[in-house]
Length: 109
Length: 376
Image (tube, rainbow over all chains, first blue to last red; front, side, top):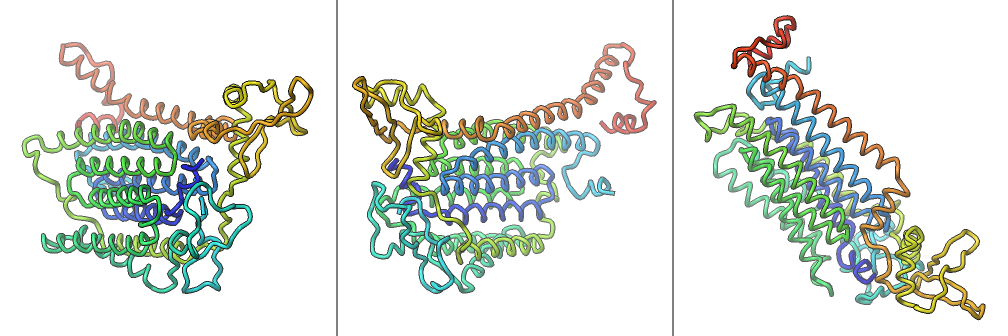
């Protein structure tokens, strides 16, 4: 109990939220500025990470473990996304050997 | 002080001052840690900042990120690295001066170290020109956020993160990266393609990032008045009692350990609860042989652990989310199989041709298949 009580002793929820925000923005800037398909997917995973940190920190703050349940959900979605997106990337790559997102502009038409 | 933050309770009248948490009756002081020092300015949350300073911080950080992303030469990158560290140090000074130097310094220092590793690895991940190194840097981000989860006492999530993310998802990424890179240029492996070296619209991306980060920083540094206060001791004990209620074997072992003479089963109250909670802890009431009441106060070590909490929430509170997660994984598996199937058939045909058999599939019937067959 002492450990639980002192989890936010000097640290505050705000510090975790700041860190999570910084990580999320780094992932967002990476997603917008990189052109490699796989790196773009990695950046979405980074944003998932940032959201997971915020979930766990807020859940800890309210002593409510549904935040961690949601992180399990995030892990599931991230794993499914990685499997499907990477399968799609491999399919695309076989058709035209490039990972450049701008070479696949015609997909959006 | 335990678990409370200060800034959510902050009203706008305290502008310019550090945010002080009002003495709330439901959070009794002294949960086995340092007593509240005078005012608790350093101990409680962040120092409130109303001015433009948080926005300048965000601006500096994203200018450094722009320099790292941009097309500038070595000089600009070095400037970006220096500026990035300077901005990070500045954020640390404003956000971190309230967290270093307390009584239990361990967690704070670990938080700063893990945060620095996570942020610098994330920046390196989006600025590195080789995707494989980006993936490796992402592993560092995952490991340091697992460390942060340990600091937050989310042990189960920390290990699940390392196993699922660092172990499975990142390996998938690595496989695909290796496949793609090897096939692209077998003779000149060291060549980094142009689309990996040059960022796309870094200025626009950094602008969007600045707006987003400035919003977050502004909200955090000025406090969120509508945010409810954190869970007090009673709420924590009630939550622990609720989970213990669902673990009768665990509860019985804990009761028998602390009171061997206890007459099992304990009495049920009106709501059929065996376990009761107040601000002193959690306790169980039973009847002795003589007919009088007997109360056992359970030690703090008997409470449910993080894994039990998460398991209870997952199965008892949100069973639908567990089912939906299973369905998502199943559908992802179907999708991956369907996406990969065509390639396997195609490869089978090539194998049959190679040993002199006829093809199973006539790809000429399907125009899209022909295109795929010719380019593969």
